Image (tube, rainbow, N blue to C red; front, side):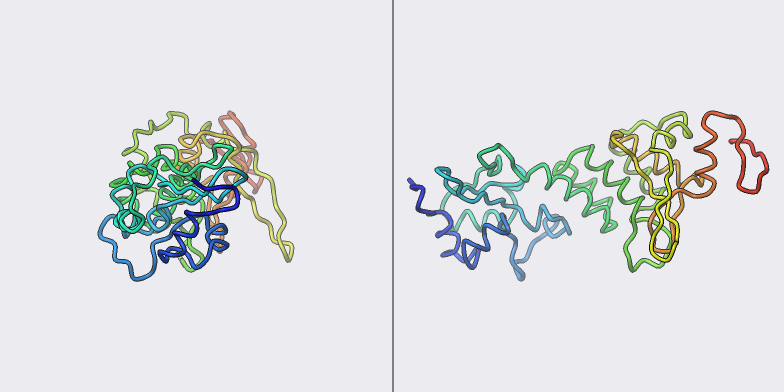
Length: 263
């Protein structure tokens, strides 16, 4: 058994070639699939959970170093099996929490959802949904609507509205009946002045549930309350700001000074 001054597991991981030294091991806190290690489907998906399946908890006081899986189903991961074969024992399926009980497993579940959404692989996400959670998927849908890749020349998000709706339907998210109330659950539009005096109207969703946030993004884009700027970031449109200020009123005042019906 390790004493406070020994790190048997760390030494073994370095000796087996899983890390160049224990210092770097402590910085990364994980064992990553090395370049050149072939992975079959679905393990070759661009998910940080799949690329870094094993978490490493450094020694802390009298607690020795630990390793564990970031999700129990990663037991079938080819690289996990490879590491277990070289170490000669089964890696803990329940992670490697520190002495405060923190494990990176919940974070890895979010990684899996958002990484596949931003890679435009929502079908693959649904096919591997057992590695994440319903809330993570819906938060990832909202994230995918909000942002686009910086090299994407189209004014659109990582996921189209049609595909976002398919994902929401697949996870059993019920569509709200009151579209404007769903959007107005977001915080009131507030201007942010950027460099050179340009204005940006960021979207603050507050502490809404994942489901409410995702539907608000979908409705906001569909109804024109939200639009993408030239950099591909979603923000409040002039229409959206006017409609938000009108509240439940049947009409609202346009920037031109004319009254309009809030259809």
